[in-house]
Image 1 (cartoon, rainbow, N blue to C red):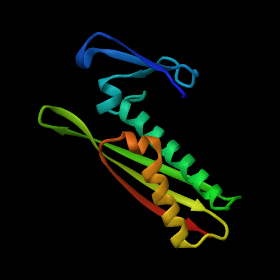
Image 2: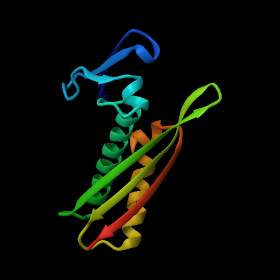
Image 3: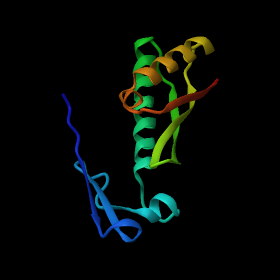
Length: 142
């Protein structure tokens, strides 16, 4: 079992409050977040951006291992995740995570690539965690 930790601190409340996020690894160290970074484009991060980063990273690693298991090597994978936060009755919800994948995998057919990518999407732990629509668009470069 692997346990990872992060912490968040918020000073003040509501729109006037300011927060910071820190990860055990130190990759994030008192990274600012708050209403302005979440809804007004101010510098800093927000929970949805962090979820998008986690989903892109997790899916990409799952795909990498799936391709290796299938005997492929020497290529590259790049994934972008776009996580959508919608206002709904009673608050907000994450409604979707759209994965966009570009890969270079020498010797793979388009069909095999699509099947391995779909399996990675369904088995990635972050995909399993998200209770929202997940879509995957992919392109294979020569």
